[in-house]
Amino acid sequence: MNTQKMNDELSLFWDEVKLKCDYYQKELNNLTYYVFQTPVSFNPDLMIIGYNPGGRFFGEGFLKREINWYTNWQQNNVKEENHSFNRTLCAVFGYQISDKLTNLIENAVGTNVFYFNTESEDTLNKLKIEKPEMVKEMLSFCQEKTRKLVDDIIKPKQILTIHNKTFHSIKNRRIEILSKNPKIYKSFRNNIPVYYIPNPSRRLINQFYSTDEKIKSYRLFLEKLLFVTEI
Image (cartoon, rainbow, N blue to C red):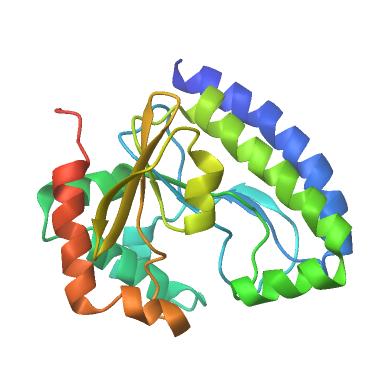
């Protein structure tokens, strides 16, 4: 698939997503939704998939952000609510320390299983209580579309999931526990390797998984597990 064909398919994909998500948005307090956390490319060495975008933003939905995690890491005056996540993710990838992982994160395609942003997973869980049928339908729709992205449009060489629910949503084969401390799992989606590490955020309970020692451990494991296409 060339870039033009990918863009054509993404355009059709976005038409379907926007039609449904505009409807959901009216029922979900006008929360912003977006599909990609990064610029998009076909068949990247790595796709990073989270649970849902962090933050509390309102307004029109959009397909993709044109700024990348490492760009946010470089900006000291980033105002986004989830900028600590960007810094920690870059630390996990040893940005500007590990050449291999730096190359991966600079060219990775990032998305989430669910497209509506909330300031925390607790906020999303409250919406599930307030509007259970609507949220259930929205989550199911987004999950289906994210799988379509992986299978039919982006077709990454490997996937890193950064939430336990995301891992179980994306993988469709048995789980292999690669490490219990730090916690790292492996599975596949069809023939694509799918890895899991806990959400790299220093917030709340996730602080346990984001100590400096854990971050270094993740980096050492990822250097061994993930591959980069030779240029």
